[in-house]
Image (cartoon, rainbow, N blue to C red; front, side, top):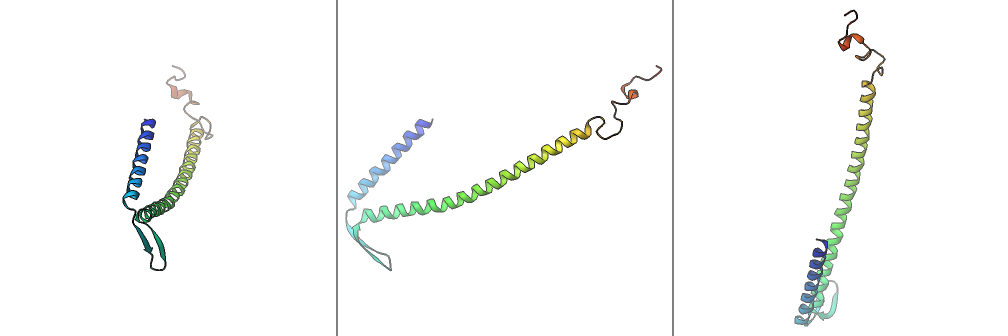
Length: 123
């Protein structure tokens, strides 16, 4: 299954590269880019479009990485909380076992009382 995904990824990458080459061949006109403050020199339309596409991709990666880091921090906090609660649960379970053991409370239990097991003296 992993090799199929890998080959599909390679095929998709090749297809995108092919479309990029065809796009740059078809759009070879040169235009300057005016950014209100600065005017960039004339370059091919394909270059400007591909640069805008790359800038958008990088901006998306930056925004998603911030969200991902926030989620990883939240996950680590929750993992620590669960571990702490599991430790407390284990401590409470062992405390309940010690209290249930004969002689742990200092009093008599049903194991210490011979009359409680159904055999009476003198029967």
